Length: 333
Image (cartoon, rainbow, N blue to C red; front, side, top):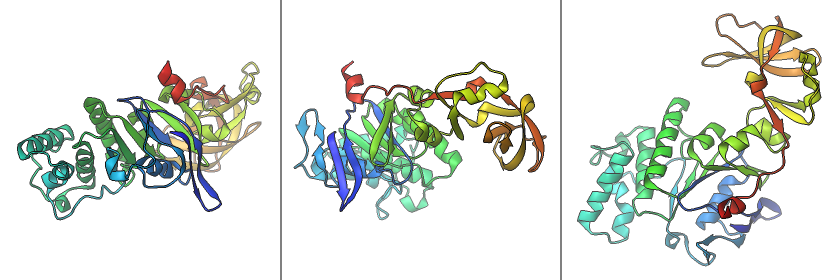
């Protein structure tokens, strides 16, 4: 992608995006709803008209229609053919390409095993669960061996437990098949599970690119840090209230940065949210203002309770580090 932009009238949905995706790697486009990530994906597929260029191996695809780009597409709802069984859905692209029957059947069987649906070939899609339908959609997209697989929020319609399991399974399938993929998601846990590299988008622009570890450990700015789960971003010197030597720069506090316990900072609980293995508290803390803190489920303070807070340095991340190199630079390295 070079200078890729998409406008709807006076609204810039995507602005001047440049990056490369190396063969066999997975890039996640990560950002909040409305940031332009799905529009960018659709422009890559040829479903949106924009300016700039989309190239495959140095060949400009501007004049190439969607069905001739050799890209596979998987959307949030799968968009399966309800009148075909599982095997018929997976084989569709192969039939359109004129693949011989024996080769087609072998490929379908191989892919159903890969996505964990061996023995489901004859089932109708209406009999499948949501997770099973998405596995069929993935197998169908992989069947013609696409140059690039484009996935637009492929797991967002599923419940969290199933989404987490399918994210692990999808990561395995992409790596085993050696598929080059571009994945759109608003869930950073999902992006970090699936991708080799993550491009964080906001307001139509790519704000940061890096490996999951780089992006997680060094958010490029305050907004990125908040999107990645830092409930509070502040000047590092403010943490001196915990007795630490003064620090420089900006830092983000993840929910795990502060916990209830004997500590030098006191405050009042103003809200509480029950999580699976802890309770997340919102505390009006003296010297810090509103912050998140964690407590054990068994004896979590109630709203209105006075608490003391302890700082866990492992939950504090530097914010606003120098921008990481572009995907293009990293690919050249």
